[in-house]
Image (cartoon, rainbow, N blue to C red):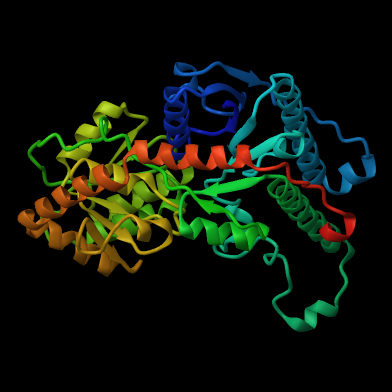
Length: 422
């Protein structure tokens, strides 16, 4: 097949998955060409190792024309301008792809807007690998954004405050606009692929679309058990952000008996404010927190081969590469029993799944720390499980099968009437 690939991904698990997919498809004889926006991370696992990649500018310019709207609702006007700039960049990509006589589009998630707009601008078969919906709009952290400004007292619901009404209306319209665009983009796909059954349920709730699970895989020639001597430290892996629940990890380590093992957290990106907060939490809790940013794969693999266990405290993580990468290196996992990790970690086999209370996390971690033989046994079972069931070749098998099925089906009329979208 001749496949056009589109993405706007940062460094992290999504980009690693795409890197493996592109490498695997090219290795099987398919002809690929890639497009991305300049807001993506091209330096991290570059696709140009396997296929040409065209980088398209998504330059944002303030193009607000309605001065009244801009005056009263600057946030809304700026949001519309950014959406239009992103859409224009997708249109330019679509025009170039249309000229290339491709069999289908293999699109991936997009920074900020998740479901890419390019799906609505191409008259060809379109498959989207969606790592997750826009969680900000559909999950309460700690409250849903469209609920935030509503009155707490029912008596206040009768009060009309024009200035507050205008501000709230602009905020709600911003959310509605982005959600509607994402919904339309999702409807334009011939097939949406997701990384777990948990993600399939999330996509159904958010967009009303039946997605298909296409599990990801780990490169077991890279992530492997090196047989190194284990050291007494705990490792965490993921962006240094509140959604990864690093506060849970620090609090759990603080409950471990003295001498407490250090917590080494490896990240590609960080929220600096959150990073400062957690560093202070660790200091005040007596936890030695070592933060390693953007390290090489070789250092990452060496760390996973030396650690005593991986703490995985992410909340509602759609899939999570980290537990499988750790398992491939012979490292057992203690994880919060939420999201996609319940599909990769078998409690008591390759790790422990626990409720998100610090006492439970600490208890499971201490069990492994106090019993190195158990940790070693679970780690060995974990490495075999990844090699058999979660290797990257099997993930490419799954993806290739679906792409061939979509390519062989008759064209589907994706047009929607105004009545259907109201």
